[in-house]
Length: 129
View 1 (tube, rainbow, N blue to C red):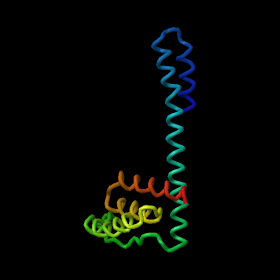
View 2 (view 1 turned 120 degrees about the vertical axis):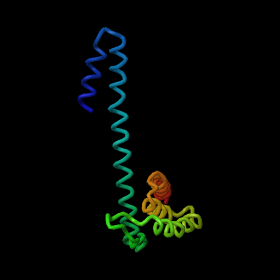
View 3 (view 1 turned 180 degrees about the vertical axis):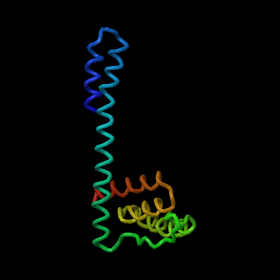
View 4 (view 1 turned 180 degrees about the horizontal axis):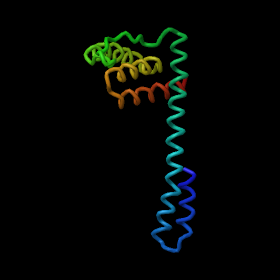
């Protein structure tokens, strides 16, 4: 990021307007990258905090799903277990704990996009509580 900022300053000092435009673009990219990095770190820290609370309460989902010889979770078993957590989240939509467990179920089923969205929902509910 520091090198990009240095290059941005050098390009903005160039008399050519295209170089100046590239310099402005180079100036913006490090800030966007820093914002994304901070968001990911906060996401991980909040997730870890919620996991610690659930662990202390005995509310973490148990990882007892069957696995393939390569160590991957058997998809059919994860899908069957998913329904339990989906019903729990539907029954308690304002409880961050149910959304956290649903996120874990999505992850076990291989749906990372929905797992992250469910965890974001859990974080939002956690921050309100």
